[in-house]
Amino acid sequence: MSYERLFTAAAPISPEEHLPDAEIYASPLSRYVLDELPQDLSAIRANQLSYTDLAAKHAALLAEAEPSMLQNEDPHTAKITQLDLVFMLGSYIPTGSVFEAAPADLLLKLRQQSAYFGLPPLMTYDLVVNANSAEYLRTGQMRTFTTGETGRHERDFYLGHYQAEPFARSATEKLKQIIENTDNPGQYKLLQEGAQDVATLRRYMDAYLRFNPDDFAVIRPYLAKYPNQKPNASGAFMPGPQLLELALSPPTGGHVTYLQESGPYFPRYDQSLVRRATQLSQKGQNIIDLLQAGRLQLDADSTVALARLIDEFIQFRMAHLAATRRQIPKAFPPDTPRSRDAIRQFGEQDIFDEGSMPGTAGFNAEHVLIGAISRLLELKDLSKAY
Image (cartoon, rainbow, N blue to C red; front, side, top):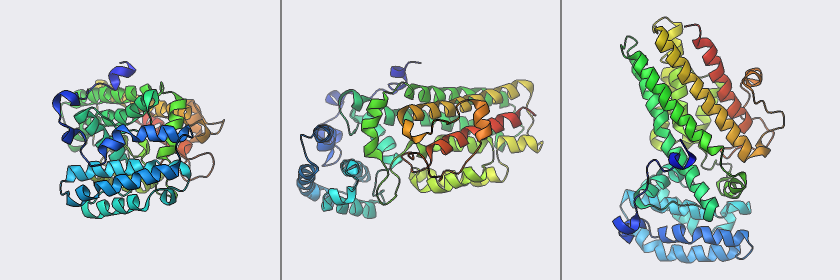
């Protein structure tokens, strides 16, 4: 499947033909964030506009939008308004002092919306990936910090995560059917289809290998960690792969630490889902524990299908490592292991270890990614015995 087909599998509608302006621009700030903010940030990068000028412009826009925001009671409008507000706040992250550089009214409105509607006060995976991509598919317009070809890559970065997530969840649900009924006569079909789901998930990640690192270098500063040490939105908070791994095998101590630290930054609905999945997996409700306990038995075809599913998952994680190394090479030391044998030897290391530049989630990117692969490699070795 080509790069283009992966990211246009669910094509957006044409807003000019199907939606009135009031629905395209769902919040009083949408017209600005969609149509002008990327150009303003481009002007700042070209030294044609100052952050002081941007803050003054934002303050005026917020004053104009205030009556509509105060009157709004619609949750969808509120969520998209919050999405616009966090994009405006993200504009100032490259200054290194975002909370001082942004207008005070922007911070106030983020807090007010957060308190009244129960929305996150800072950028999250749920806002930039889920809410943003859903709006793109509804209206044909994606919120980005950048313009032109870089903006298209930024759009695809968000959209790719959104469109890949259902395949991880689909594979997880098929494994859960086996876990909940170990005598399920359709085991082979479930494992075979689950492997196909994970293969599609892997192809999405493969597409990121073709992203231009120069483009990502422009995008990344707007998604950097906040000065108060709160993580920004990050692919590390994509819940589907975590749920899939928990259905396959019990979490290690390192994986539990990762899930606990990441938990508050997963999409709100998924936070309790991941906690519950972790608890069940720790109690033996996963494929490998059931096999080891003799409570699950697979025929030869099903064993092959399970091996393929695990291997596709390993390839997904390997592609993630390769894509991240390509996009943010400074986050990885020169001796970062690349082969499966080297990754086995490296094993699972402390995700808070200081060293190279951390990922956008604030963890040691090398240790997070290699740890995930090493766990799956061990799982594959264990599964061969059954």
